[in-house]
Amino acid sequence: MSVVVNDAHVHFFSPSFFAGLGADRESITKLGWEFPESGDALGARWVAELDTHGVQRAALIASLPGDADAVAMAVAHNPDRFVGFFMLDPTRPDAIAYAKRALDEGLRTICLFPAMHGYSLHEPKVADVFELAASRRGGTVERVAVFAHCGVLSVGIRKKLGLPSNFDIRFGNPLDLHGLAMKYPAVPIIIPHFGAGMLREALMLADSCPNVHLDTSSSNAWIKYTPGLTIEHVFKSALDVVGPDRLIFGTDSSFFPRGWNGEVHQRQKSALDAIGVSADVQNKIFSENFSRLFS
Image (tube, rainbow, N blue to C red; front, side, top):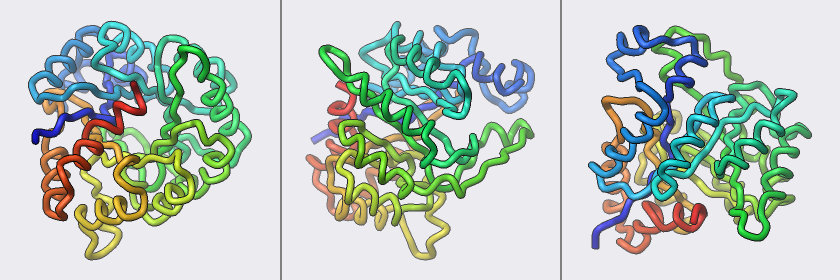
């Protein structure tokens, strides 16, 4: 039985994203990366890339506050292939108005990076985000999810460009989402990278809150902080505690020419095979759970 793949974690590095970092074409090409001609061209590039690797659908993430329009355009032109996520800094005075406009443009998931933007998940401004997400479901409106990056945060392109990364990971504890997850049970919450070093806390949260999902994306290099831990152990623990219906595969792909990071898929599939996970369960992780969340 072949496993269909949907990818819940792809960063959309548009021209406006690079401009937001203060990076021009020359600085990006010096890294050996492609500088996209336009958001449309990048969307088409990702469609071709997904086709090459047999990936059905992908979540595209607008990876700076203010870049939602670029992803919204890619989604509008390819609604059967992309689901739109966008980064939100809830400390900005226009945060909710910006989020409403992004959702009106067809984006489906609000991404929070508390360590990056320096706020506690207990702040009322975060509750306002969840209130907005909860309010958007009704009639033909699809539900809105909240993606919350917890644990260790490292942004590779910032390092490559020599930009400061003044992140405060004290704000990234998954347990700080517990009250919001309980208050808004209809809002799906996605925690990427198995909690990025806070696996125990992410599992505790997901065990008590059935609306919490774990995204499996990236190299999961945070494993090094727990001596002896392997990705096989991570998957086994997650399956034992959370079950097969709330694990969502992702790669954390981002730039070209690397494109879709198939090595992540291969490594995770090998890990699941090694611990004896059935094809039916693998299909849930690699495809069905994403399809259910983003029908």
